[in-house]
Image (cartoon, rainbow, N blue to C red; front, side):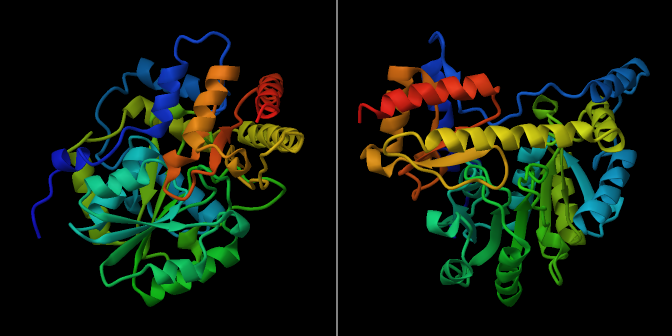
Length: 388
């Protein structure tokens, strides 16, 4: 096996397909973006105040490498109560956003040349992070007719003796797909049979609609030692710029490996931001409920508007704040569609090709936008599509 370097792996990774359209739209007047994946709500005031208070009280020192003890304790309590995962504060690591949690989990779990199964369409960071970690990504198609849920048969067909890890993301970015308990149980049977590790990315757990509930992979029978759960304060509490995420693992040696990597990187997370995160968990939760309700009504609006348009369709996403719109009847590639829509109608969407090899017949629409902006974007899209 030849050596692996991050520098040489970087040469194999293209620039993000999402960035390209944002760069093109810079400087254009009157653009409406359905591209950005972050809530359009400000961080709640009580969270901001807690962080300012921590700063004023001089809490500007390093925290423990794994994060503030009080925050890890609060996360372990939340996990037991809400997610059914029995973890102690010593099995929780506070990271620089969900992004670093994901990197640590992948880097610490695989050796050079080992395979990682990535259900596709997938979040843009999964495949590059696997490549940078010396692994081999194996992208497995999740079809629209299966509601973009990974089928157990497809998973099993792609397992080889070099498969080490499976990445799951529910609710999903980019499709908004939500894995029900039964879906997760079917997958867990295979994970146990082949002795795989799982990274379960649950950063959108608070955004599931129509009264459905989030299920954590690590809460299932026999799974708790095999799963690294990745989560974040970014989406649930509208704290994207704060960069506070976390991971949990009951595998002691794997946890130590992730902590070691973290120590030789950022050392620890911002102490004062962690006090804000602590208040997010301990303080009132109405904000989260209200944001979920608002996103559900925006999703419903977007679905209704798409039904009025020529040549496109969508299945109703059950979670997150994305909709994966099928554009295959337009006979355009997703990049062509996104660029033309931007140039002709000043609406930013993200081409499906950014999310893997099976998604060129789709574009991702993000709907963390005020109702009038969604309506205006849809008017423009409808006009655009009437020409094709």
